[in-house]
Image (cartoon, rainbow, N blue to C red; front, side, top):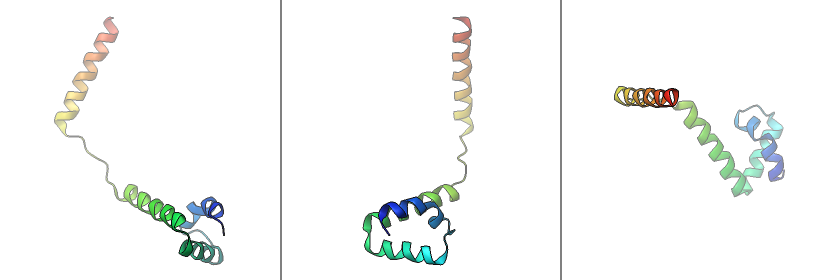
Length: 80
């Protein structure tokens, strides 16, 4: 397997959707290819971060300030 071949099936590999034979080929390639191993590890970590990340709640004070500024800008544009 070549690096470009791995990149074509990276998503399926990370999602665990490859058949055993192809998965074994990928894992064999990863044993000897540091750049591909970094790509796979980084992809897995990125997915985990987004999967585990809860939505960020903006503090009430910040929301109110943002809304006030938006209303002011809206008024400026409407009157100008």
